[in-house]
Figure 1 (tube, rainbow, N blue to C red):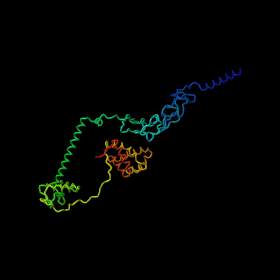
Figure 2: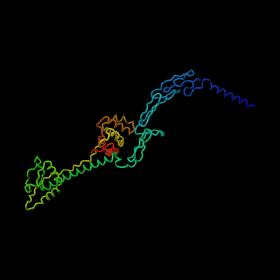
Figure 3: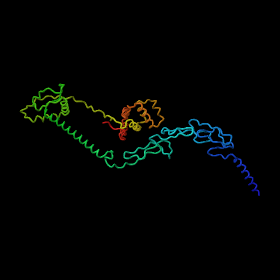
Figure 4: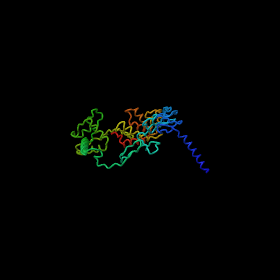
Length: 391
């Protein structure tokens, strides 16, 4: 009997409490309104914030536009705006931040960040090996996909030319080679015949400006039919051949005189043959090959990433050496190392214009005793067919 009155009192208290919260006029629409002081106020539109609520049912309170650098994307009753996202140095802006929309960022070309992973840094896109081909190129959200190349059907399919054209090209090459060999053999035979006929006579021009020597004393001992008039150019060439190979010249001269009886042509008295003074060995240091761009400025820009091989402690000296001032170099210190290299090389290309070449950059590395880095850059430029060695 004592528990029933207690239950009634408890039920009455609960009814009174819930009745206070369920007063008429508080059935606010969630997406459009908010409750304030027992009335439903309209939410502030996107791009604004609520400065003060409304005082009457169905009205909108005081709304103020978000400050620069902040936003509210939806209708709201917030008293604040959210701070805009700042794109990192390895990202680029897809759409800027507005009062009603946050900024949208994505990885810069050549880098990616998988959406299912926490994108704290954009990773560098992979490159396919020489025995692979690209299935799907790298995007801002996916890495490069590669697969093994299929065996080529034949030589013609590799270079993409019809077999008929290849046959013609091969035949032309064979003909050119045969003509060259024939002319070389003919020239060699004429030189050898002349040396055999000349005997021990020295056809080399000395003081005669016309290139033809006056008759020497030794010419009197050889029949005139063995001596042929030669142009000054031919005389100089034979002179060089004789002086460069003194042993062979002596043997040829000796052989050409054995065809005559010694009694008919007595040997002339020995005379000194003038020889050019010995030249010191002038072997030059190995010259770094000159590279030629396949696609001009585009080839040079594709090689920028190879300069990431530069020692971190040397890259400031390198950029000073190619004419980039310290203020410009320091202005890029906030970037990642790879991006700093790329931006500074881009500035150099824009400054130099047509004078900007890969050879100039390689020469700068050599001047700084960075030959190993220069070799690495050169090999990569050739391997990826951005450049070829000048003939």
